[in-house]
Amino acid sequence: MLRRFLIAASALLAWGELVHWRASRKCLGRGDAAKGQSLGQARRRSRAEVLGRAPEARQRDVGEADGKREAGVGEEDAVGAGVGKAVVVLGFANRGARANFVNRYRVRAGLRSLGSEGRRGAKLRSLKSDGLRAAASRRASAVRRESTIRQSPGDVSVSESRAAFADASVARIVRASAVSGIAHASAAAEVLVLCGGAVSGPVPEAEVMESYARARGYEGPIRLDRESRSTLQNIENAIPLIEDAASVAIVSNSVHALKGRILLRGLRPDLADRLVRGADYRFGEQILVKPIAAVVGLADLRALRRRMPKPNSAA
Image: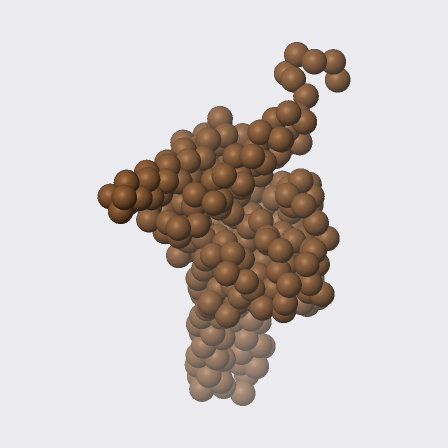
């Protein structure tokens, strides 16, 4: 009797693993993003486009970036700035102000899907920019000191011209670093998109997951959908937040994420062609939960396919 039970339990766990493994590889993009090529190509194209613009266009971009910083908006947080990868995390019914077990797992899977560059990108760019500004300031100070020491009573105009040249050098260095930062941010940034309204509690699931992601040390850009109350609304509200991404990953449990990808393909086939695998499937992870999630998820997928119009049906 015990032997039969162990065999049946092992078979059930193996079936759960198989269902989630297969779901994690279905309905991905048909473009270069699905082959893992578009992200690097998009970075190179975007950088070439930014650096190849006319000087006045680059100055206009720098001015817009400065305006955003003065308004307290980060480059990466602004929708439309252009990102390399967007990771969409689908929320689960959260009754309190703290992330529940399911949402904690999904946020961790979302952070894994971003990779180390996404977790540290914003901080590293800030440090790089600050370092360039500091180096430029030191260079300007050295030029001013040298001109002050060497000047004679008749060399006031020369001293002033050297100081002006130093200030211009600082401006050029800072401007070049800003243009480079815009090119890098627009092409290589990764953004976390958290979806979920206040379905089962007073706080939107997106805000609960954001707090958990920050508590785990994530310092990169986050975009929130605070209004959705279903998986369909998750995807509908996420579409404006991911349109500027070169590739998109949808993260949940693997079967639920497949449902999200199917919905996105029905709503926006052009965005669905950018879909790549998220890191929500790992062999042996949450092994006891996977069979339950597989049963619920497969039932949802069958119901979804019944509701979706046939390819050759009248619109």
